[in-house]
Length: 285
Image (cartoon, rainbow, N blue to C red; front, side, top):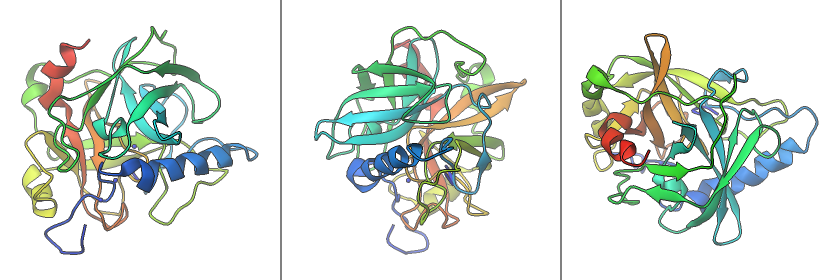
C-alpha cells in the first residue's frame, strides 16, 4: 500500500478526501477484498502493501490487525485496525458504517501478512462507533471493536495509547509509521508477491492540512505529509499511525482519508487523532 492502512475536485487549496468514508465499501473495500482474496489463491502470496512503502516483516507491527468486514448487503470489505489490549481494537468508524453500507460483523486478522488465510482470526459483531461520528465530514471517525480474549505472542501485541505529556503533544514534525493492507498505489492491483507494508511519514501541522481539506480537518484530526508520494492508500482505512516513545510504539492516529486526487498525489493524509479520544477509549476498556 502506498499508505498504505483514502478522497477532491482538483482545486489546489480545497481537496475532498479520496477514500472518504461516504460510500467507502462499494467504492473501495469490496473490490479490494476480492482482489486480495484472488491473489492469496496464487502461489507465494504474502500480504499487501502501502503506497511508497516497503515490506514489513512479520512482527514489525505486532498490533496491526487486518479486518475482513461482513456487510449487510452480503459483500465482504476490508479495513485495518490496531490491537490496544487483549480484548479491544481500534478502527475507523466508516469501516463499520460508511453512510451507505453497514457491517454485520468483522474478523480481525492478527500475526499474519495474509488477510484470508493464516494468523489468528477472531470474529466480532460487537463494534461501537463514536456517538458523534459524521460520515460526511469525517469528524470522530473512530470505533471500538470488542473481542474475546486474545493471547499475546511475539507477533501479536497491543500498542500503547498516549499518556502523560503526550496527551498534549501535537506530534507535528515527528516521524511516524503508517502500516496496513491496502494498495501499492492509485493504479495498482494486488499482486502475488506483495507484502504487508509500512512507510515512514512526517506528521504535519493541522493548519497545513486544513488548507488542503478545509471541510474535513478538526482539532481531533492529525495529518501526515504526502511529500514523496507516500502514505496510506485504499483499504488502509482504520489502520494505525504510530510513533516510538522511549523505544515503544504509541498509537497516535487511525487512518481516515487521503486526497480525492489519489493516494500518490503528494497531498496530506488524515487520521483520527488518538489523543483526542483517550477518555472515550478508556471508558470502553
